[in-house]
Length: 136
Image (cartoon, rainbow, N blue to C red; front, side, top):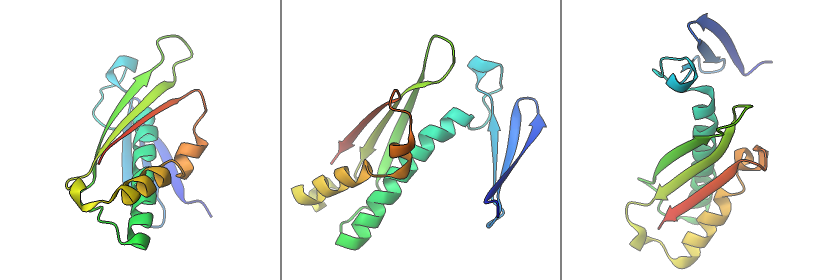
């Protein structure tokens, strides 16, 4: 059974549906590629998927090892190639823990290591630079 469906709704927009939950997601082409930039672009979703996957894996580890992860935030920057074909060149993610003094050095090391085991990180093309930093 399909987990997701999508429909092109015109104007360089799509509407995706997560079948199990019914949640929807609109994408829009970015302004530098003929779109309005009023929603996530498909390449934005790739970057968000990497970040959220890393956070989820760190969350699994934090639950398992009783490490405080509440309030972890991330800032994401996407760089596209300047030459054709148009594609993601680099994804920069900066994770910031709200209270790093709650973490031991072992906690920090375990969280950092676990982030790079996320399925999205392991699935991205090796030419895409994953510039990941941790402020904790």
